[in-house]
Amino acid sequence: MFDRHLHVWPPHAPRELTLPETSLYANLSASAERYPDTAAIIYYGRKLPFRDLKTQVDHMAGHLQQQGVQTGDRVLLYMQNCPQFVIGFYAILRANAVVVPVNPMNRHAELDYLIQDTGARVALTSQDVYPNLVSFLENGLLRHAVVATYLDYADPATDLSLPDVVSEPRLAGLGNGALFWAEALASAKQPGPHTVGPDDTCVIPYSSGTTSNPKGCVHTHRSAMATTVIGSLWTIVDHDAVQLVTVPMFHVTGMQVCMNNSIYAGCPMIIMTRWDRFTAAELIQRYRVTNWRNIPTMVIDMLADDQIERYDLSSLEAIGGGGAAMPRAIAGKLYDMAGLRYIEGYGLSETMATTHANPPHAPKAQCLGIPVIGVDSRIIDLETGEELGPNASGEILIHGAQVFQGYWNRPEETEAAFIELDGKRFFRTGDIGYYDEEGYFFLVDRVKRMINAAGFKVWPTEVESLMYGHPAIQEVCIISTPHARRGETVKAVIVLRPEFAGRVSENEIIDWCKNNMSAYKVPKLVEFRKELPRSPTGKLMWRHVQDEENQAVGRASGDT
Image (cartoon, rainbow, N blue to C red; front, side, top):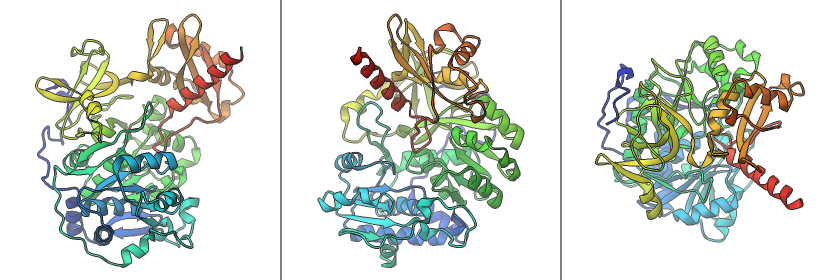
């Protein structure tokens, strides 16, 4: 068992934990009984108490069962952040079925793949993305869809700025096989007995699929419960907390750290459908938000405007995130403004979110943190599989209760994803990292993202982190490009801060890099852009940028 980190263990957190032998739905049932009048959700001014949340969940579960959903069936949950996502998630579980969370940016080909792969025949969706499902209802791949209208759950008298998608009134009508959300609830159907337990399948989030079709990660109620309970203990999310939800709940971070933690603790979650820095600041100020899990780009965006200083953010007690390293300069500005250290963490769809997190009392910058409660993590050599010691880079392995059961219908890939070490089954993350003398883990990069420049291994994440030290750089993505002598070399695609646009040249960036990093890491090419592509979770889509470069180079070489 890895124990190098125990000397910095959070004083308030247990080292081991016995998980509840229940389904996730039991958490909602308990909170509704304990705190019936507490607002479970606050959505653009409207509050939904735990009592009413449970009632609506049960009625939607009854409707799903009336539509033929049986134990173990997969049901698509396809919408943006909204109260109906929470209701739908728990209704599917209450119906003894399995949640398949769907990226709301997915379109026909992606939906067709998910429907065929999971065998889902029913979908809970929203009217902004419902048109993408119509053809599947018409051809019989889907037999039923319940369609939500975001505006139904917002306060019509709110003074908050509503995103366009939330302002849209209910559609005039739906096609065959579809029913409005409000109509499904109005039938007030009661579900049959709740029979699933900790070892039944709960949710199948899909991996990003950057190199092939995405893979479904099979999680039981037990593995989902693990990060729910562990997360609430690590950052002290209790009944008195107030959580701001700005990361997508279809992704495991928003699903677990925001939604399921709040349900388990019985505390309010303030849900935003679309990111807006001023709305977020107003919500923090108005509802005295204590916990905000985000992605670094949201903090970067919020602190980029001096007007944010008009808002009172003093209620915040815990702020952190993952998916990308927080630039040191931004972390420093956050501390100066709010007196808070940004707490970074690490996890994957295969681990139902967090496996590593910084101890709140002793965080390190640009660091994954230490293995959390019950997690054993190691580093192994990429070629030999030998376990490595401190400060040696290799593949990160994870053993813990939150690790998935395997990839849906992919036994060979499941087998390849695990390795046995010291009699334990460890998940091979595909991430390259190392740990220091104190047991803190650091991410170097993805195995498949490494750039081989004349025999030197260049890890783009490391170069990006260094380049954020340049005052003119707002965002940067490091990719590879072919090079006649070096095989491939380093290219930086950069978004400049507005005040530096047109005032900084490519050569000035390269010269700065020469003075601040090893020669083999220095970008040989620089390209300025107005923006970089991002996923719905806010992650930089480096694969998309790399593919654009590959296509451009291919066209160029074909023309010569």
